[in-house]
Image (tube, rainbow, N blue to C red; front, side, top):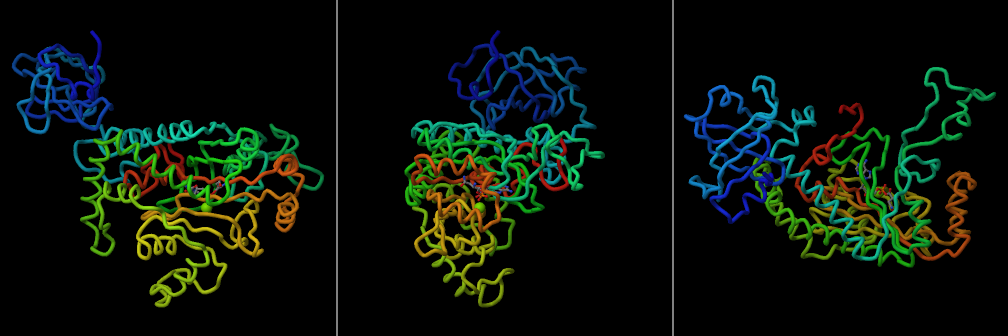
Length: 477
Ligand code: 4AD
Ligand code: MG
């Protein structure tokens, strides 16, 4: 007999038929009602057991977490909160779960505790909902780009170029860690390493994606990226997934249009496909917020926040305008910022970004034309000679969600910038070739996928939106 998913059963109009379902017990009460979940939906199906006709030893094995197979008749439910239930005719235990050992009980667990049990936390409502939304968002990303004529490029994860400058890198090596081969100068001899040179895990697929945009026109990468920064925040991971579109002939305005349309589209998509999960996460969010002090509380529910992003244009503001707003702001004057904003050219910290988004503009903001000194070498220099065509998209509760730019397409200017940074031009010979042969205006950006998942699910900590988070001092599982 064919197995049916819980999601399909809960939608089913056909009553009185025999059904077959497999899943895990979420709870068992009154020796009669099994709440069964198979991952296909946030909702459980109620399986009603005739306990008088059921072997006592079998009843004892229906514990939270156990895998079971159920055959029975689909009926209108007598209870509240569900349309159908299964009157069980046959129940089989597929895998026991000892209630004395099983950590995930039907009660509220702290996120800290669940992080330590990341292999089991997806069996809770919150985490299964988050991970289904994550999956749907990932699909929506590929769908958006495919529908808009982009090609998906798989850029390398192991990279031999360390010139991106986006952050500290993790070395990839097969050399003997205790006795590595040494050069005459007393340095580690990477020519003897696996790749014959020093290699690292990539911090971004951008530079390689740029070379592909110069032939395929519109491309994107969506892959894991790695940063060996010692950032212990609710928004940083050492291993995260980044979406990086790169488009030939797009200038910065077109790049901003793309970022805004793309983010709005994927959010709209999951609002349609993940209704049940987002409603559950919305309730969770509202409850969580109500426990915070008034001043820190979000004045919108999660669903309202998502709708707000769809209904409102992102406010576009130059760095210089933002700098003036921040310099004259109350928290700056009252010295409430940890990093004061006094001189044009300072890098903006997350406290500043959040002030602009949450207090001042009260909507998503795109900051552009940043000082060249605080941005990467590949960003296009403006006529003023001191700002570059950079853009960061800032979101409420998250801060920076996107970083991107129009790229410097002029070979001579790019070479100058590389020289000023003391980067060896030879290392970037292949990148510079794109400027030597058929160079053109082009732009792109990187969206941190986990930050997007955080925003959409309302989860406060980035460690709770990726299955197995990698952070400083933590690579369990
Ligand atoms: O601003 P970033 O460093 O930009 C780049 O790497 C460019 N090469 C992208 C491009 O233009 N193609 O990173 C892009 C985004 C950030 O805005 C943020 O959302 C996310 O990646 N991000 C992180 N997410 C989680 N943990 C970290 N440690 C992150 N660092 C950056
Ligand atoms: Mg950035």
